[in-house]
Amino acid sequence: MAKRSLSQMDVAGKRVLVRVDFNIPIEQGIEVIASYDQRLRATLPTIRYLLDRDCRIILCSHLGRPAGQVVEELRLAPVGDRLSQLLGHPVKSLNDCIGTGIESEINSMAPGQVVLLENLRFHAGEEKNDPEFAAGLGRLADFFVMDAFAVAHRSHASTVGITTVLPSAMGLLVQREVELMGKALESPASPLAALMGGAKVSDKILVLENLLDKLDHLFVGGGMAVTFLNALGNETGASSIESDRLDFARDVLERAAQNDIAVHLPHDVVVASNFEANPAQTRTVPADQVPEGWYIMDVGEDSAAQYASELKECSTIIWNGPMGVFEMPRFSQATRVVANAIAGLPGTTTVVGGGSTAEAVEELGLMDQMTHVSTGGGASLEFLEGRELPGIAALPEA
Image 1 (tube, rainbow, N blue to C red):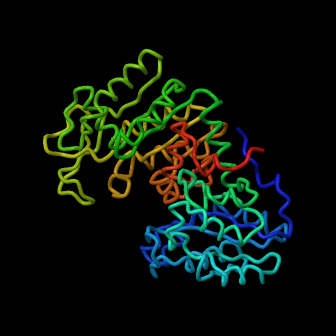
Image 2 (image 1 turned 120 degrees about the vertical axis):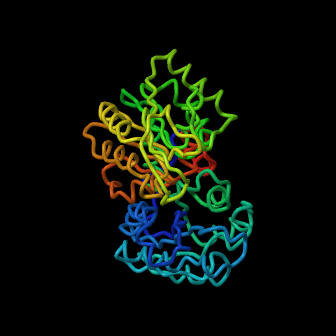
């Protein structure tokens, strides 16, 4: 069901509360915020839309897991400073998110002013979806805009409860997420490929269940490939195997064969003598000749090249999960190869799931060459699983 969009509300000159997701790795130090600001950049279109209409813009977000307590290291002011640089417009960071003092600050705002409320999770009522906390947020604004797709799978006060207090709609970011991922699931151009990686099969079971019968190609990498290779009877050394998912992997392979779905597993892999960034030894071996006690760390060069070649023939690509241990530079090559192969493909829709996949694409400087890179890790997985996201479901219909 189509949900109300921002363009369907008359917000000109009004106070607008916008739920954004500025949950970035600030614990690494404020100097690295600029390296991980995709989520800030992604919400700029909504903020600018509201600025163009002389709105009083009240941004709210969580940061980290303060568990209802004030944690000085998790204050949002440094994030607000970075947002101000990106926006080219002042952003005032407030010292709380509810209360009479904050209401007074909001009431004195001028048209076109932007404020950032303090970390929502400093209050226990946020994660409890407490009606009183939602009402406190509601007193700050005339309208609510949901522009935080990354937390749309959470039933919190600022994602669900607030929609019972204020007239609400999707922001431009959430609208784009829902429309592009929805189209990739419901009416994709063929051939449709799923490129699945990451550490575990269990993380992707429901995604595969939802997608498999629609696919023309399934490419498997990362830790997932270990379990699939083992399910075929290959020795996989000391690599972690999800023993309880072997039958599921075999079932996927069987169903794919019955439905003429091409499954691509690596025929060569990069292995290491130790599971660490700089192991004593590494080598590339056939996928069925992994030495005892060694670890599969990446898809091999030949397989990565083959994946890249096959992916270029697809019209829709849904990618979730790196091809290897991407955070260790020596084992990031296959992820780099497939990312560069699908970036900027003319006539191809490329939808990249959030989390580690989005981080890899951002690190490679390929964000703008993908059709869509989701800002949500868990939320994008649940969406691809076909599940209803509470923060979207709570919004009124168009």
